[in-house]
Image (tube, rainbow, N blue to C red; front, side, top):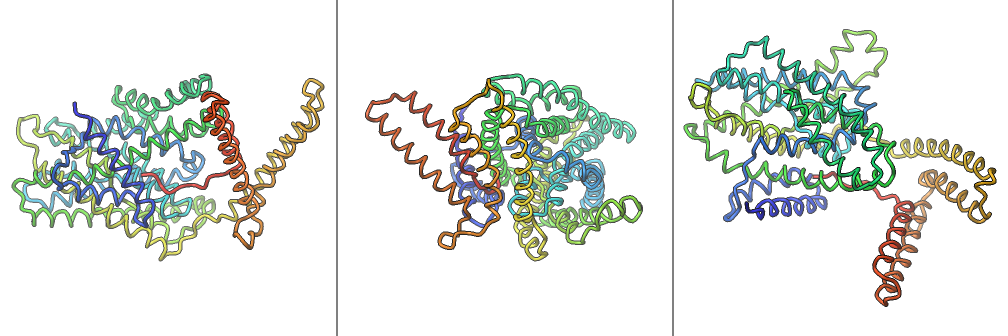
Amino acid sequence: MDALPLVALVAASAAIAGAARRTPVPAPLMLVAVGLLASYLPGIPTYTLDAHIVLPLLLPPLLYTAAVDSSYLDLRANVRPIALLSVGYVLFATFAVGWLAYWMVPDLPLTAALVLGAVIAPPDAVTAAAIARRVGLPSRVTTILQGESLVNDATAITAYKVVLAAAVGEGVSWGAGIAEFLVAAVGGVGVGLVLMVPLHWLRTHLKEPLLQNTLSLLIPFVAYAAAERVHASGVLAVVVVALYLGHRAWQVDFATRLQEAAVWKMVAFILESAVFALIGLQLPFVLKGLGAYAVGQALWYAVAVFLAVVVVRFIWVYPSTYLPALLSKRIREREPAIAWTSPLIVGWAGMRGVVSLAIAFSIPLVTTAGEDFPARNLVLFLTFTTVIGTLVIQGLTLPLLVRILKLPGRDPKVETLAEAQAQSEASAAADARLEELLADPRNRLPEPLAERLRNVLERRRNSVWERLGAANPLTGESADDTYRRLAREMIDAERTVFVRLRDERRIDDEMLRNLLRRLDLEEAAAYREESEAPQG
């Protein structure tokens, strides 16, 4: 098997994503655009999405990274809007878009039309997270979009399996379909609940960071495969396990957390970049398979389906936002009034992605009767155009819409103040514990060392408050920024000397690595790296 095309895909998509960070264009959109252009260049290999690869191998780690970084408490606080979107909207979109396709395309069976509806119903988890991070949406809107994208794939995949069985002639009744849906949902959550505690126990009892991070890389695949083996939802199993592990990540030792964050950041960047590039590279395959449908006719269908996908989301979002409060006094008293702008953003942020394409490519070529699956090529084409249309049109205009609506984003001063207050309480507890320990003769230290511990604690206590202080009139830096910069300069000077001593053979490479690691940890403690642009 030639690995060069795969290596070329990963390298090129990573380079394009890196270049996109220096432009105002979101990386997902640039990757899709470059993929579309590259798909017709001579010498470019054929990359075809395979559901047997995307769903079990790409989807679990992408879901895992999104869920681990999500807030379980925030998701629980917004469980009603998330459930209405991730379950209610997906089912509503499946039937609404399916009925439109059934009415619009001559000789298209209703079951095949519903297959199309299920395929393009779920907004994409990767796209939602990437765009939300880039445009700086309000925290509650971001939580709702992330929560929706974590669960809606499970709804869509289960609905797809039910309507596909009917489309290929397996004679599934509506009652059996509903039962299968419930079994998949309950089973997926159940598998996640069964696995999450022993997996967390393993994470906290393995003492080697390398072993812990190896386990971390395996967890999403284990959860997904275990659930699918019992015909439950692998998506829900991964999400449940990831939310639990993320909520209890503080119980894992610091070395594992540092290494795990770096490893998963790299994995997510590579996978997200490759996924968006793969979307664009599907164009020749999709167009080649149109067959009996004229290009003009197929484009008319594509525009109609795209508009239906956009409109149907708004038809669902606005009533599901305001009707619960109108019908329940308890909800009105407990939750603040929601401005009309928030559901507008949620409605417009319904970009589709690679999961829809992967599901579409998994549609069988023939039915159980041996006949060609009705309009399979058209379903592939309409899925592709819907994914591209939502990514390009909604993805490009969403940042502009956020700026026009002037949505209140996160307030850095309020967040810094909350952080400073939390640090102050924690430092007071640490200070009391330090004095208690130093009072014990078994913990006696020379006064300079004891004072160093107090200084470290005082520095940590003051650093957050200093970010609220006035900036240096010459540099524009806060005192905390200047401190971190000077600390780095000092560490760089030490690092230069260590390398020189190694080059002069006064220390060996093993000692150099130990000394550099110590400096790296000090630099990590002294310098708080600003959050980067979105991955992928």
